[in-house]
Length: 148
Image 1 (spheres, helix red, strand yellow):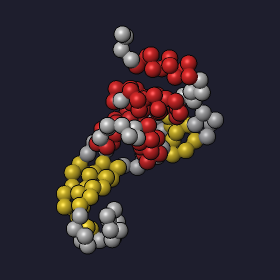
Image 2 (cartoon, helix red, strand yellow):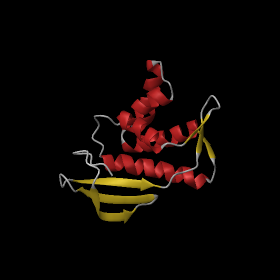
Image 3 (cartoon, one colour):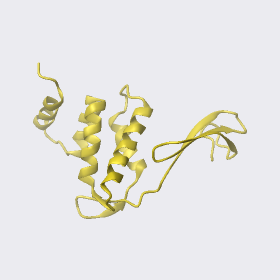
Image 4 (cartoon, one colour):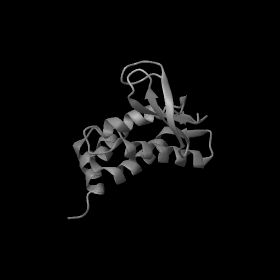
């Protein structure tokens, strides 16, 4: 495993713990002696069906990237984002299907973001729902704001 600090490929495992869907390993670089964490997840054989009918393998990193963009510069801990992605994956696995429509995955993410951070929800919704009109954005903001 390559050290994210110095780039050396020699590290040793200090601690290993089981997570809900994989393994978390705490490692220490043998060169710079800094510690870092790696996660191992079970490879899912889930296909995502895009709106145009294309199918592509589920990609945790792609989902994480989209959520990280929505959460950029927000006071949301990385642990909360990873927990949200884990929760979305658990919900997808619970379906017991080999194919899931991309709009279903997007709606799961929106629901989690609505509970986590309203601004991140709006950011994700603007891209996911292709909001091109300020009135539509205003309607969505009205849905998440408590009545005055």
